Image (tube, rainbow over all chains, first blue to last red; front, side, top):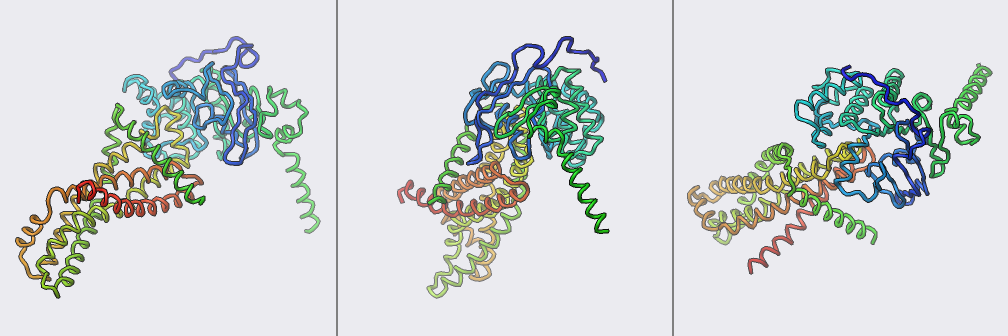
Length: 280
Length: 253
């Protein structure tokens, strides 16, 4: 790869650095119709960290990400990014924000009508990034970064789920964002691709100093990539802390979640096997 | 009562989308490739159904008038009636209903699937505006193409009428053409074409609006597409009456 590898962080990063958070949620409320998903939600994200938002399905984890770049509006409360209030930003400010904060969507959300190169060039064109030649070079560069060189001409329909995610990630990092939001980055992928994506999240953080907010319910992935964990439970971030703190926390819903239901599953399976054994 | 409120809500939302669409339409940079693409898909792709419908509509009108007028000895006037009917009513309206079904459903299906796969969100997230990228080119394409398709349908409909009139009434093509030119003036032609401009707007804005509000996966896309076809057909037929009344009032007739 062309970019030289340089350790960006000599000093403690994230919450431990003592610097103020770059992203804050304060007293955020959100409801879809009668379904209240957030009540008085608070959250901080610090520069350079990987923060994972955990929570059950359908609890609105990804809504946090979408509120941050105003794909969804808050009902009330404040969201700030880099010290500026997001909820009242003008169109132009929002454009600037979306250059600094990129998002990888759950299904990658590649444009079906465009090929891989055109997909990756899309944000470059919208943000007036470089000349046409520089854009082409950047496309090649980011495809190499995600380990898929030479697939510029392929259409999204020709890619597997894992490849789509990686092209989606290439598209997200094309404009060199400072923060990347990952919505269920490993859901539905085979173990090899899960490892690749986890590796990419870590590499982007370590080599480029990117701050990451990951929404997932994949516990293995969470354990691999996270510096800190925020646990969405009962419409707010009921627990926020480092991985070690989370493991030590005495908070039954989180404990259950961190075990990934393994204990109970094993128990269930054992019971089932025992029953079958008896029947046989 | 709830349904009325729901309908009013949709009308309000469509009005807001219209406002945004037209204000974005005027702002450079203009997305010509997207516009050309839509004009090709929506307009040129629809010419065959417009022609086929118009040909047989003109023909069937001619049969009805030729036979219906015969007891009064007025069959010779068939050409006059057919040309007025085609140019002012059936040309614009039938073209709008058929092309609207095809094009509007296409818009909803395309934008709706993009919506449920988060591609519309992705457009915003990547620094672009979905209204500029998706709605503006489609509305513009329909505003340009619907009048053109209607003009084509008018000519083909008149031609269909001519063939049947020559056969049923036994007049020459020259007599028919003279009759048409005698009957139709520029005002009549513009009456039909102005209506088609409104129909083009209704077709595109409804198709896009329903697409942008599609929820519920692939099943949702199917339902949304059906809703679009129904909404467009009804809107075209109801607004046709109102527009006709309005134009006559404006013309002082």
